[in-house]
Image (cartoon, rainbow, N blue to C red):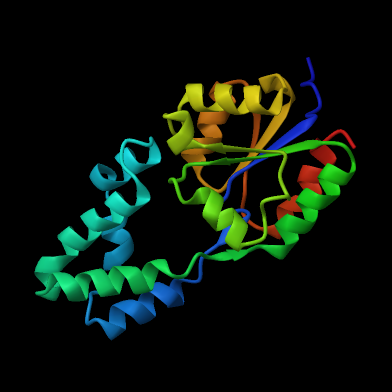
Amino acid sequence: MSRERATALLVDFDGVLRRWDPAVAARVEREYGLTEGVLGEIAMSWGLLQPVLTGKVSHAEWMTSVVDALTPSVGDAGRARAAVDAWQRYRGEVDPDVLAFIREVRAAGVRVGLGTNATDVLDADLAALDLTDELDVVVNSSVVGVHKPAKEYFQAACEALETPPARVLFVDDEDRAVAGARVAGLSAHRWSGPADLRYLRAALAY
């Protein structure tokens, strides 16, 4: 039996709608004499990352934990804080092809949600990137209290979209999130770049 055609779209933020220039972090690391990649390595360590993604700690508290972990290698807490602050000032860039696609989809009457593992600065980031009015709903893991790829996360996202899972198409750049969405009953596509947009247009009912 063929699958129902999707009538709503759920897109990931980091890696799909928002992209990061790795040169920014590399420049900060060089300036402060840090090992290349150490800022992201510390911040993304699961012990620090999981609590902020589920709203147990704030973004500011998460960054303080990164400063604390970085201080021994820098030798000075003030310098570690300055490095983290310099790194955090950059909030990424919008992928223009994805944004154009979202606008096209919404203009056709398809509801679009942002489905992201994020912190309590997400709303500020969306505002800074002029994305606040570009989405119908925002499903932030730190607000929901559970993160992708948990089934409960996708259930919350479908409820926010007011669309049954079988009618939601989810797009993410991580295999685990895509697999989790499929387990929850959504259609899901592993994002690899703008070349995927042709497939996504065909998969949506407009």
